Image (tube, rainbow, N blue to C red; front, side):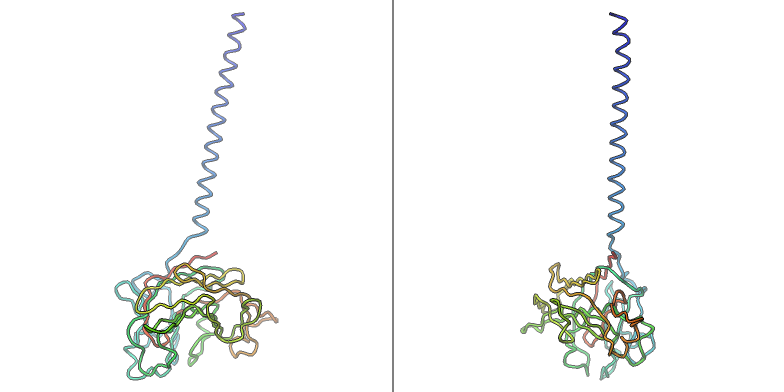
Length: 277
C-alpha cells in the first residue's frame, strides 16, 4: 500500500502543476487580448487637433479676387491661441471679398468638432445676411479648382448664425451650393433647410458645433445635441462647377474638402478637432 501511495502523489502533483500553468497561461493570453483590443479601439477612434494654436499650418486660404494662398488683409490670423477671422484690413468696404479657409486634406467619413464664437461688428459694406453668419463648408471642391473671382466653393454647409440679443436666429441649417441632399426622404426644396431643433446663441459665448459625415448620412450637433440629419448628397448637373465633377454619370458625393467661411462678421475658433472613421 505504501508503494501505491508514493506513485499516486507525484501524479497528483504533476496534474496540479500543469493545471496552474495552464490557468496562468490562459489568464496571460486573455489579458493580452484585452490590452490589444483597447489599443486597437483607441487607435481607431482618435481625435486629432487640426488647429495647433500657434499658426495656420495645415490650412490654405482662398479670398475672392486673390490667388490661392494669399491672405489678403491678414484675414485669417492666430493670436493668443485663437484662430481669428478679421476684416480690419479691408478698408471702408468689404466689396464682396468673401473668403474660405481650407483644411489641407480631402475627407470622406469623419466627425469634426469646433468651438467658435462671434465677436465685434460686421465689416463695413457687408450684406445684410452677413451679420453673425459663418459656417463649416464640406464635401467641397479642391482648393486649386476654385476660380479667382469665385466667392464660395461648391459644397454643402453647416451654417452658423449668432443671435442679436432679442430675436431668434437659429444655427445649424444645411445649405447646398451645387450639391443636392435628401431630408426626410425628399430632395431639399430650397438652398438652405433649417435645423429640426432650433437653437439660438446670443452674445459672444463659445458654442461647440459638431458635424458627422458617415456612409452618406450627415448629422449636425450643437453642444452635444443632435439638431438635424440628412443624407445622399449628389452633384447638381446644372451647376457650373458641380457638373465638372460628375464622371461617367456618377452623381453621388462621397468625399471633399472641409473649410471655414469669412463671410463678413468676425469669428473666433479655439478648437478644431477631427476624428476619421
